[in-house]
Length: 517
Ligand code: XMP
Image (cartoon, helix red, strand yellow):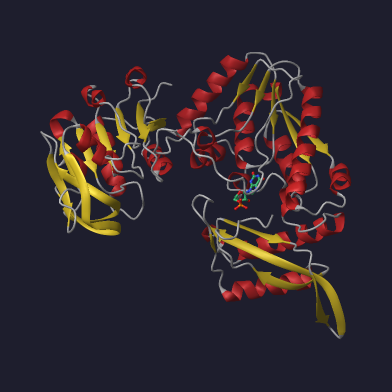
């Protein structure tokens, strides 16, 4: 890596990935490391700056993540955020105490613009606070650089040692000048040059891929999703026909999607494109299955069987590539010494690629392993991948299989594909697509009585789902305007055979999940 590096030390806060994304948006390459990464390792990485994240703990808890005071002796600028701010104070001989009044949410602070961190920030500004402890005693050599009504130290610094800390969260958009504060730290204090740019990334990655792959072959599983599409684009640019993309069409994709993916990659990119059409085989396997988990498992197992069988045929030594991105690889500090806790399995996701033992490759290639999703999209656009693919909504591995409740049949797939296409078309025409994170139609396998012309009908109900969310851990149902809902309902009943009723899903997550199964 030739870029300057900012290290983000993860103390388990909820906004850690957001901090990293903001830093990257400033053109600075950063990596998230666990809070207990050895100082020697940090030193060896030669970072230009370090950020301590927030965390859910109090610095006085026995089990709280702590850090050796040696980190402050490296001479590398450090910014502490929230818990990271208190930790800096505590470790350097100051103290934190419980606030008389905890601060949550939008809070006005008064900041000192003579401090490098607040350069260009108006004296009074709004920040996002979320804390119950505050710094009650400053460490030696520090001065207060911002305060709020209830917090006598909303920010502190020791400019000589290049140590800065803020009690609030500059990374969230509710902090009006948060981005400027982060920029000030990166550019004014640390001296970053902003050398992390996607154009350079493409050039450097293509060069690296060429060196690594040489004249060998590469096989990539292409799903038509954003990540594998962009990985395919990069690999194609690097090694052209040495790349074989295997695309499994299990018949559970959206209307015309399989053809669109094939057309795009065979027309725009130099590669071997192998499409496996196995719609019938999947329908056969899914016959009679109604339980959601059994469905998911059947689809997943069958998918990988078909995929690996094809890879076995195509692979000829060489490399196996996949579209893994940075958030898939981050090991969170999780804010306690035991690290990651266990979470209940709500649904089985089928994105984990486990390679059968009889297939061997010279190595695995993950060309997007350092990128966040928004960066992957920028790369995709620069590579000329169509907007529709680059900005594609998340689509579950089991596809429409988890949007057809009950048994999956050819007829139901057809109804849902048509309904979903009409719904998506109407959202696009209404100009509200950008406001929704994900939207799709569901076939709940319910028939209801209706009337069309003078005739009684007994046909399918379509449910429509539209959500807004930042991270899919929680989601809200989107407030689609009534007139748009009216047009959608009209078109679905008129244009899609076997649909005579439409309902709108108004469940948030939790208690619902985004998908119905
Ligand atoms: P849920 O239904 O768990 O969905 O609230 C959250 C997000 O994940 C997507 N999803 C999947 N994505 N494989 C995937 O790649 C899957 O098996 C899967 N199941 C759900 C869902 O569409 C939503 O964006």
